Image (cartoon, rainbow, N blue to C red; front, side):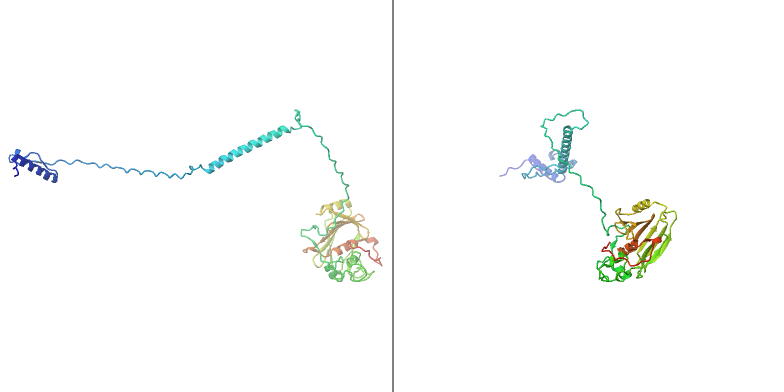
Length: 361
């Protein structure tokens, strides 16, 4: 049988139950047990709740991952920095080496003004002097015949077309002398057409037919000389300032635009002075000295387009101007005009002349 509990035990059990109930009901605790209450209601004491302050715990940073060991050496320093250091070292070394070599070369080769005598330890080897070559004799310069050289004009001048190579261009044969550009000897007398014109003969007729007798050319008379020119050309005179050395000029104009200009001095200035002035105007200083067919002293520039003739103290300059053209189509006619100049006081009518020489100047 179960033993009955005494009253104090019952009170104790009841108090424990109430404690459990009070713990569920917000932890209300009775301050006096039942046996001491004497019928009074127990005072309920509610304990104060403790204020709990929340502590903010900062998260701990995760540990850094340990790099895997790949067996490679640690990263090298910047290549740019290393290259700059190497370049600096090389530059310093180069400057030092060049300074050392320069100083040493100066020490080995003392100047002639130094008073210190340098004693050579090396054996002195006598030098054998090589014989100097004998100077070559100076030969007289022969002016070259270069008809295609630079002309006194700005444009580049070229020779006119000569299909049969007879000394006359096709333009001269067709427009002045009425010859065949395809036949070198139109009259079949054994002389080239250009050679006959050079000596003032008609290339289309047998000797002694001259250019003047065939009316292929006309004669222009001045105060000092006469000159022949093509009959199809025109003549113009122009007078310059009397104070110049060449106050008088004559212009022979071709229908195609070319012009041959004569400048005549007044005789007050010496021929040597005039010739030097004429040479100073030339682009090419090479001048050929010769005689005209009549026997006057003649100077011809290497391009054959400028000439200087001396006639009894009077100087005459000749200039061939191609105008807007670049081809020299009247070169043989220009030379014929120079060779036709004669003194006016000794001028005689042309008679039977000897046959032209075998020349094609």
